[in-house]
Length: 452
Image 1 (cartoon, rainbow, N blue to C red):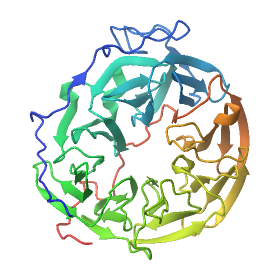
Image 2 (image 1 turned 180 degrees about the vertical axis):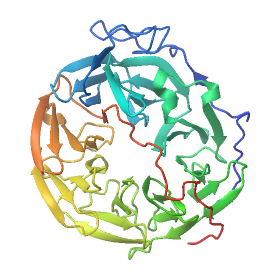
Image 3 (image 1 turned 60 degrees about the horizontal axis):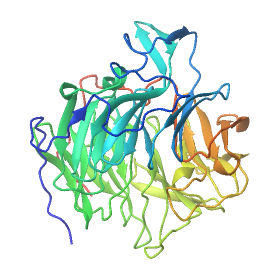
Image 4 (image 1 turned 180 degrees about the horizontal axis):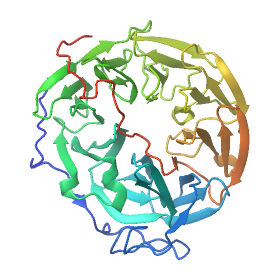
């Protein structure tokens, strides 16, 4: 049954606002004795904080990985484990958008983790610093902390337990915490597994739904007006942003009857052959109009293991499929710096595809053959691409982190890990979703007509 659309209030004073905590979370486990110190009085790496901040001529990317019992931070150039931090429970990692911090979805809060990589801009050049990797001691309250989306220099957090949304400039994390005056508090109509995307126009794209059903996506103005809406997205899950048009941002979302695209101020449905088609995991690139997605077609499968991927063309609202001949899972997908579609399959190959044609450019043998575990929280290979353009692949069975040159199609390094990796984030010090200059220079004109 379609749910009734509900207008969202964007007031920062709303009673349902999420609380921001800039102190240590009560009951949070302390770092182990071998971890770098995490000063309680100030964020790591800032004036008055850790004293090990040192200037360097360049920053080597760092990988932050979870394992059963905590996190480990690895220098991907040397393989050195620069920090291990104890933390109980299942942890999900999300890049904060500033190139330095990771937001850890942990129960009812987003904890802020500092990778220790600092790029300090000075006019036409940057200065680079390294410091200890550690929990900052700050967190953002969010019942059932879930999705994080960084887009156009802003970061949005979604709390599934309330439908609450917190939006801030990605640069707000620079001091290791977020204060109430740095955040906007919004809310969807009800608690549900949802997502929000801050748009360059100042509008907010968000899902609407309940725990029982979600089929609505809206774009809401800062004044609280619904300026675009679709109710034709049953089971909405998964989003990605693609190359913008002259009219503004382009966002795709997964549904159970084919994806939907927000483009030029309206929603457009992507036709599919199947009655049930779900692309709940999507990956975009700011320079490409194509979005990489998984491709599932069995509504009765407890754990569908597809071999086909989808390439969504946001210009034509169409999708082509490519059969890779080997299965993959949701942590298998990523995008290269030049828009390439990356898929790690069960046979251990990292497939690098031309996103426009679907042709395979490289097949890089990375891991031994593997299979998706029964529980999605369990360890299995994961793929991430840093802003340096290199792909990073975990291999839990051998406790390895592999580094791949995507452009060359070569495996350049395999690093030993002390623990079995589960989740992965890669930081380079460079913003992951910087605010881009647009052709019109004055922001995008909103198109009021609604499409399907």
